[in-house]
Length: 327
Image 1 (cartoon, rainbow, N blue to C red):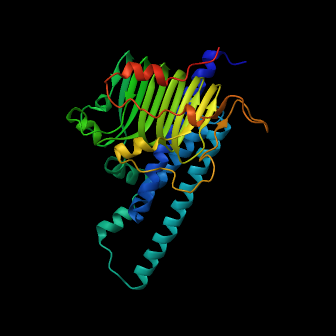
Image 2: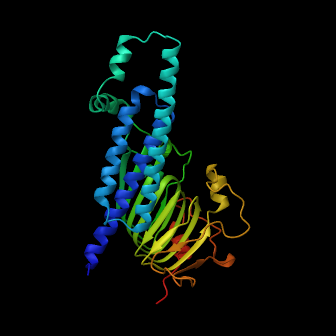
Image 3: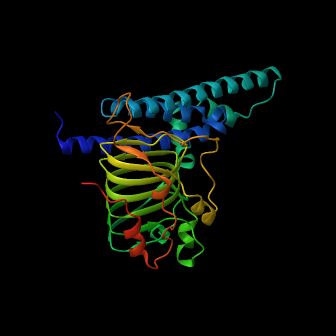
């Protein structure tokens, strides 16, 4: 039987691996759209490396994550084969028309895969920068927390750790102190050990992973939302998939507040029309036909209307908005 510490370490590994793996798949999918015959070898080598990573992680990933990663990898392999077919077809057509190919191009095409990979990777591989927001209590934090040295990318991953009795507002603003932070986009968020706080996270391009939250409000637009080992959470989401919870209780879900989108000019992630609640939370601790007792939707009289968007009287608004765990 796995100990509590062992289970937490395994869960942390799964979240970190899946976030990194999916980011790599997305980056390769983008490169495949503009790839040519010369770059095929490089991309094929990187897809093979991803395949090896996934194989080595098998057994340490939840079945859902394993399946999603496998599907992404298969989609990449399919796109690669289509690219190979199209470039092969173009090459044959060129020879039939007797187009003269420069010697340098022939040398590059004939280059062994490993060598081509070594040349292509420095100019095409872009990794996310990172920021950490940690160890804050009894304060109001704005997007200026994301300010930092410029990097080769405007996409950053953010870790939010050990915050209590505070409000974190990552919405973009016109305040000069946050202008440098406004130009970056959030590729992923890793959040853990948060108590009695409101997290207004804005739009995240990828996933949000949360662990060990108590008595919190979370507002976010994202593509994947996973929360583990948390109690008394109100989550207001704009999400393109179904949120996942595990080892959680007293969770209430609502839709992303329209008034916050109006303030920031945020575009809605979910574009399809819905006649009912726009997503269906999945509880991995309750894999049964009956409804999960660990979550429900927010009632209209429970929804927050007055959001704390400035430091003024934030402590009063924090006290008023927190969900309060039931003993």
